[in-house]
Length: 164
Image (cartoon, rainbow, N blue to C red; front, side, top):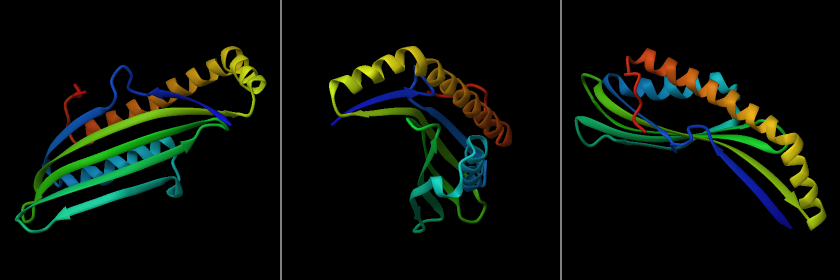
C-alpha cells in the first residue's frame, strides 16, 4: 500500500515564527497565546494536547518549558498541524521574566493507494480538482494565523517584526 503525503508550510519560505516577550507574567502569554490559536482555528478541546510542561522550582528565577500541539481536520484528506513551544523564566516573587515562543504550522494532505491505477486517479484529481481547494485552505489558514499572531503582538506589546 502506497502513501502520498504533501506538506505545505504556513510560514513558507520560513519554517516557523519566533517571538520573544519580556515583561510581567510571561506564563500568561503561554495561556493566552494558546487560547488565541484555538479560537482562530476553531480547535475543540479534544484536538489539542499540552505534550510537555516543565517547571524548575529550585531557584528564585523559575524556568519553564511547554509544548502544545493543535490538530484540525480540514477535509477528508487534509489536516492542519500547529506546534507551539514556549521556553522562559519568571521571577518567583515579582513575576517578571521572559518567554520565547516558536510556532510551526503545516497543512498535511495524505492519499493512500493500493495500485498504480488508483495512484493515477489521485494524480489527475489532485492536478485538476483538488489543487485549487488546497491552495484556498492554505491561504485561509495563513490569514487565521496572521490574525492570531497580530492579537498576540497587540496583547503583549511585541514589535511588528518577527524573528524567523
